[in-house]
Length: 266
Figure (cartoon, rainbow, N blue to C red):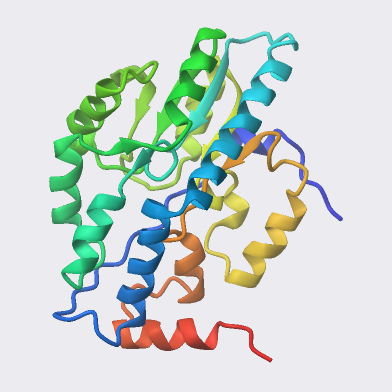
């Protein structure tokens, strides 16, 4: 199996999948909306979801102890996504879905401006532990610049470490995270990347179809749980967009058809 060098970890481009805006007056017989409703219920109510989050951060805790025994010429840093990685936006998702809607930018900005998203299980404790160990935390998110204040308010509400403008890197001209990674890597050694989308870890996942993304995941098998900490997100992400071949103009009915034909059956 081909392995990619670990320096790709620090200098790769990635982006968060655009969320597709879907509006429907009724969620009845709409697999896209009904399916995301069920996934949101899992995120909010399943003990298994909570356990997966704790498991991810427990592993990350062990990696920090290991990395801190290693010398580095530069200060050490963790680069983490925000949404469904350290903050839980399921109340927003639930509200939209119960109105027969998916993500849309206006309602999303209204939600983020409130700064009311709760933390993912284990996220705050882990990042506070890492900060106490002398590691800086950089929050690299594809939230827009006009969401900065609400995002900072949300992070500060829970006393997340390094919750300031210097450590909050929002989307500017591109959703790719490559430039932001490079900027951090100029002054720090990035020891962990955390996210809920494979694009958070490597540009090699970008704009690939589902089968290709799975092959790339196989090539990075040794990095998951070591340099890459993945949080579960069954509601949205490039895993979904890749099924539609990134054609965001498909109707809800067309997406429903793609979802059904993507299933393996016997």
